[in-house]
Figure 1 (cartoon, rainbow, N blue to C red):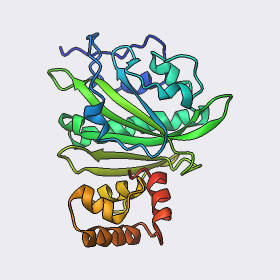
Figure 2: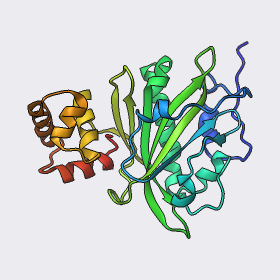
Figure 3: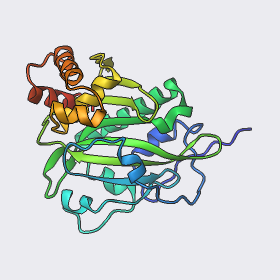
Length: 262
């Protein structure tokens, strides 16, 4: 009979309720893992504001490799060592969505093919406490880093970026996008009635250019960065504006963050 591993946690938290529904893909044997080289993964993640990152060990929900920015951003006195400490910073009204978003992410990755998990990134937004009960909007991204010989997930890197300067209301959008050699882009919107798909039909190249526009790069800088012509960049930019029903780049940037496209 195939073993089934249940997620444990040094400090109990709500996401174990989700993870324990997927024992065939979340390997939770206690295995000592090294802290991954963050720089090997950070290129596949996007941070449109102040950010920090950390790694999750799924067998006990411990976290390590925590970036020092977390202290300033959340007005903390010490670096947290358990995922529960991060979850406690999320606005209580957003916790239900976070659990739904996590489930939607896992199910979409399974639909794509769990063997591709290390080249898929999930992202969505929620509010977090920045100190003294002041909640601001954060953009969450997750990339899987380690898995066992059967392909089951052992560890992941999360990055949280403060995007309050860009959006104030949660768009309740969940994105699964490809990194590395994959070009996947799956966008889902959640409301209490169920999942609704929002699709702007952007190509991988358009998403790359959109990400650079959100970073504040000019068309000339994007052309140099992506080794394409200036004319090609401006043509893509025009098509992106049309597809997303925007009149100017500033409006485009805000919408891209609101809908979790980048």
